[in-house]
Length: 394
Image 1 (tube, rainbow, N blue to C red):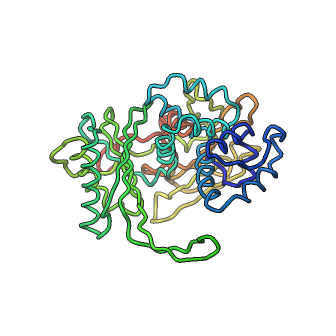
Image 2: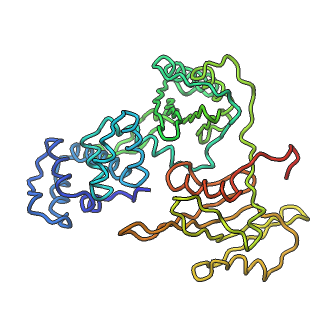
Image 3: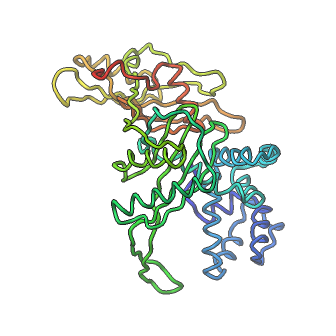
C-alpha cells in the first residue's frame, strides 16, 4: 500500500529529473534549477510549489496523490497489466530499468497516461477488504459481452434499479477493464448517490457546497470459473438483483436462477496439530508461515470462545506452547492469524504479511500479488476453501 501523502516526502522520493519533467509538462516554472539540487534538497521545491496560485497547486496535488497511490509493487503490476492489455511488449522492460517505485510511477504517468485509469481502478479493486466481496460461482461459463452498447445496458440497468428502489442512481457510468493475467473482466459502476453538502475552502472563504457524489459497485467476472464477485459495500441486499442485471446485460442470459453466496469452507482442523507444516509452492518466495493467534470455539455450550495469542518473535511455536499449557476442553478452531514471511530481495529487508482466516469462509487476503501467492500456499496446504460435505456440515 502507498504511504500517506505528504509534499516533502513525495518530492524526496521522486527523482529531480522526473519532477522537472512533470512541471515542464504542466508549463509551470518554479524558478528552481533541479540540476543544482541533490535528491534530498526538497525545501526549495517545497517553498516554490506552495507559493504557486491555489488553483495550480490543487490540480497538481491531485496528480501527486494519484502517483503516490500507484508507487508500490501492486501499482506497478497494475500498470504492467494495462500494458499487456494494449499489447505493449516494451513497457515492462522500460519500467523495470527505472530505479524506485515513485520514479516508475511518475514515468508511467508522464509517458503512458492511457494506462493510468485502468491501473488505478484495478489496484483499488485488489486492495478493498476481502470480506466486502460477495461471490457466486455457479454461473454458466459463457463469454462476456463488453461492447459499448453492452456496457451502456448495464449502466442503465443499475441506474434504473437504484432509482426505482431507493430514489437515487439517476445517472450511472460503467467503466470496463480486463485483468490479462487472470483473464478476469472488471466492471466499475458509479451510480449517482443522494445529494450531500460539505464544508470546503474556496480561496480564503469557508463555504458549504451541495453535491451529488457517486457510490461504487464493482463486478468481477471470470468465464473459466463461472464466477461473479460483486463489491457493493452498504448495498449487500442488492447483490442478488445486481447478479441478475449483470447476467442479462453482459452474459446475455434472459433468466438467472436465485443463487447463493459461495458456501465453500476453510479447513482449519489441521492447524490444531503443532506439527502441521505449511506447503510453499515452488517460486513463491515464502520462507516461513507462523500461527500467531488461534480462536477456539468450545464444542459444548453456546457462544464460548477462547482466544490464544503469544509473542512468536523468539519462539514460532509460542501459541501452541500456550495451547498445551492451558489444555482447554474439546474445541473447534474457528479463526487463526498467520504470518507469512517472504525471502529478502536483493537490497531489501525480508517482508511479511499477517492475515486472518475465519470459519466458514472469510479471509482478509485479496486475490492479487503476494496475497494471491499466500492463497496458493493455503491451497497447497489443504486450508483454502473446499465445498462442504453436505448441507448440515459444521
